[in-house]
Amino acid sequence: MTAAASATGVAYGKPISLSGTVTASSRPTSETVRIVGMPSGKTSWVLIGSTRSGSNGKWAFSFTPTTSFKLKAEVLKTSAHAGAASGYMPVAVQAQIYSVVPAARSYAVSGGEKSVSAAVYAQLAGQRVKLVVLRGGAWTDSTVARVATTGAIELSYRATIADTAIRIYLPATGGLISKLGPVQPLTTVGSIDALSAKTTCVGAAAAPLSATCANHELDGLALPTTEKAGLSADTGGSYAKGCWTADGTATVPSCSFGSTRGDAYRVALVGDSHAAGYLAGIRDRLAARNWHLDTYLGVTCRWLAQKPGDACAPRSDDIGRRVLAGRYDMVVVSGLRQPRGAAGNAGAAATTEGYRAAWAPVIASGTKVVAIADQPYLTDDLIACTMSGGARSAAQCATSRSFALGGIDPLAAAVEGSPGASIIDMTSHYCTADTCPLVIGGVIVFRDRHHITGTWSSTLGPYVLDALDEIRRGA
Image (spheres, one colour):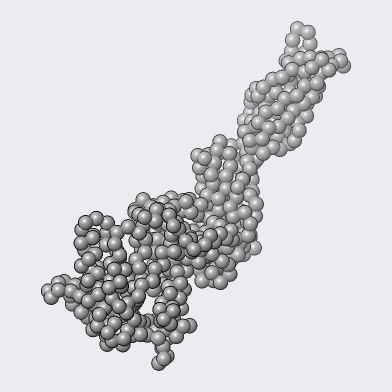
């Protein structure tokens, strides 16, 4: 009895071939040949299958092993001859890793989330899988996860500046030998601004409406993170104590940023939490333009002309006095849109008139008033979508443009009826003609239903300032 295997190792899901000969009294013979194996970690033999040798004594058998085996072929004893068995044939089975993303060199941001995705056969669902990171010249275990029921793998971790490569590792388990995925080289930079300086299409630079900007160097990024607490906390310092009030009627504080030169272009930023969200993206870019910015930011009560006795009147009146006294070159205003429905429609009309009346004396003084059209809105389940896994999962999250931009933005209507006022609209950086993706250029756009992340703001900031600069120059 002879037997040989086509290989000593085989990929999971792939067949292996066995072949050999059977002779009796040195002559070829036709007999039933049994293939038996001892699975890895077991101590007893199991029947895998059988075949029959031809008149020339030759036989062949093929099967797809799902575990490593010690194999042999045998002919059982009959009244005509004794039994016989071949020598042992060790065959190792190794799971394979397919469709790894990133597939080539890519970027990570220190402190930000980096994700690796791949696939294995669905039969390996539940198997443990690791991400290992080349950090400071040594491979280090990082995240541990389980293969999904579909065979999908997604592993996310927080990068450090010392990281230069990552790879997936399937430990030996269930009769399978271990498998290392391909080495995926990384360039890790210190910040989102450094990333934007190194490569293209980062965050708002992808501009989904105006162009298709695909950069595979950003594969696996979901910045800052898909983890709920970390995402909701990513404000970029836009709501710092002393520069923001969470008291809905209290007088708003003021903070100053940018150039301190006497000839600086003087700007005021006025509004609610939506206005404050832009601060993270423009704050550190003001000095280079020789702009000086003062903020007047607080929750709820807007800068509107109010009726005497209204709870918001003291705040609004105070903002109006301070803005006029500041003799600004430009006042930038932003705030949330009115919700859908009859109540929202009625409220929008009153808000529009309130804006116009509040702006009128400022415009009359020679100051430019510029509104930033309000950003898209989501639902709780859409925000949950970005936190359901790593970068690959989050990249599938989107909502319709019609839903995200529903309701009425009273700022736009107020500008239409206020000669000397202007509006800028950043929607082209958020949405295509039909949809608004929740991850753009490797950056998660929203930290909750209607507030942008500080990371997104940092990539949007240059475009906000450019649009304001066009108005400053009268372009």
